[in-house]
Amino acid sequence: MRDVEQIPDEKSPYECFECGRIIIAVDNPTSCPDCGGDMRNRQTPLE
Ligand SMILES: [Zn+2]
Image (cartoon, rainbow, N blue to C red):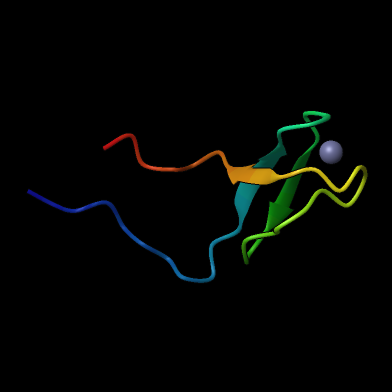
């Protein structure tokens, strides 16, 4: 069994709750660059 690889520098897609814009960032953006809405990580584990 192998765990999912975790690469700290991996860029992840984040999706804006407000406008649906998807941006790629290494760190967790707290707000949408377009509308200032909340962002969520689209690669959040499903566990
Ligand atoms: Zn937005």
